[in-house]
Length: 474
Image 1 (cartoon, one colour):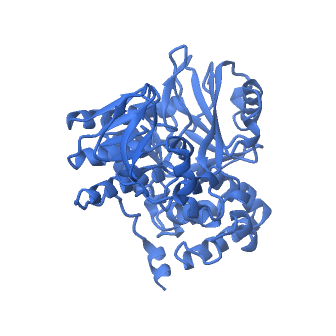
Image 2: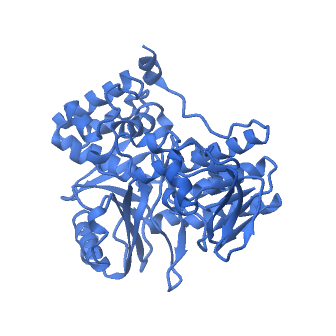
Image 3: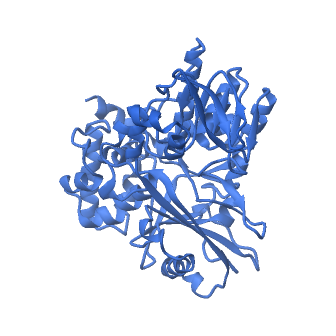
């Protein structure tokens, strides 16, 4: 069995297949695993993540994968999200003891960044989502922005709540996002189950999450090879016969899984095959969204919270990497701790759907982010910036535009013995780490079906709780 691609889709597929008795060989062109959720070393030896990635309690398959990879204990969980606006005012959303979906109501009521009219509008939208079990009939084929306006959302609610949560969750502007994807975020993470709201942040560099995958495959007779570029697939009589490496050599297996980005996958196929097979040619309709990560090292502590969602700024989230890597969790008040004398601090700022930043010089981006942090973290004004770097993922995710699902293929491809995995395949989720793992599990299930076996790796969503269970049934 050959898996091409060492991102979350390829790793989850390879892990599931190895556990099922297959000898798996995984080829990854980069020197590290993780794909777009990876870490690597700077020239001075500092290890950074290409972008800060988080999980939530509703990401049941990602949690399952971390468990299989032995990384379950390397995630810190939080039951609150702190928000800060450009005036430095703080608000937070946190879970209470009230039954679902009222568990977030007390903190929403005290959410100072929103006016009372904004809160009433949000509550009305939440109620509409609840009554339809997360599937309002008018959410298909329209943008999230249009849906919000159609449902009476105020300008303040859109700008200071819906946009803050959804642009980062889906890596796309509200006016370019299918409404159902945005509604799914709130239904699964905020409204259906109390555990869905938990925020999980790795407390180690991302690369350390995948060591268990390599060990698991090796222990079962497989292997992971990095710095190996697959040039393409050799197709004979409608079936995949081999993978062709960059040096012209070929590797043969009983079946193959392509777990690479959709545009890279198309480059691995004969051009005439792509043109005549709609499943492949349809992939050309997918568009991509960028994410920009800005890494900042200050000469002193400037932030106490583990992370902040930023309102009304170009910067969207700031993560206190020093605190998170020290194993912060919600067991401490606000996840904070007192800084040691002379301690430095490493922050990471994330900007999703950062189209306008892609052509801008890195130094200009750093200066812009530092100016914005001075508004929400006053201590940065007196602090010295020891080092900074910018990571641009220009094609970080596919854009979840209205109607995009019709271009997303199933795990079984039209080519026999060739299977597809990747967050761009048909998973029911947008381009998230959860979606990538779901695609890997679906591809593994398809391979097993071909071998005459049946095994379900896909984990169910969290069950409905409290009033969510009652109202959805009514």
